[in-house]
Length: 153
Image 1 (cartoon, helix red, strand yellow):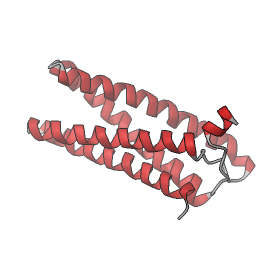
Image 2 (cartoon, one colour; image 1 turned 120 degrees about the horizontal axis):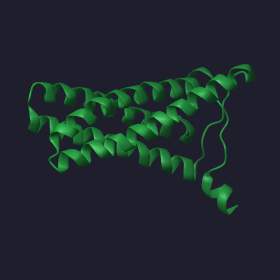
Image 3 (cartoon, one colour; image 1 turned 180 degrees about the vertical axis):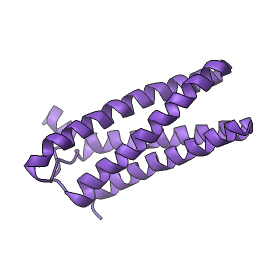
């Protein structure tokens, strides 16, 4: 496995672990096991942060992966990728907001935001895995230049 595939595999694993922990945390909250809920959700947030660190580092130092499938499918893939990126960005903002509400003891608002945030996060994880499968399993693509090379030549 090369650096081009190992880092995406690691980062995708982190986002899947994060989503599983969010599901467990949601279940704990429903059962009113709030101390366990807090620990599991914070661990899920740490895995999401680890995903972002690995993803951003790979983009900066290694580069991203170009679409490797048929040109006829590229517009569909790019639309799907755009949807995933927007969903992930919204999910991250909602996640930070939800965690902030909990730390500020605004639990009524935390519960409302948390339900929506969790659903967005599950969709983000699912679409992220789909992007991984498309780029690294079904249609392995080429690799672009690292962002640092693009910026500083």
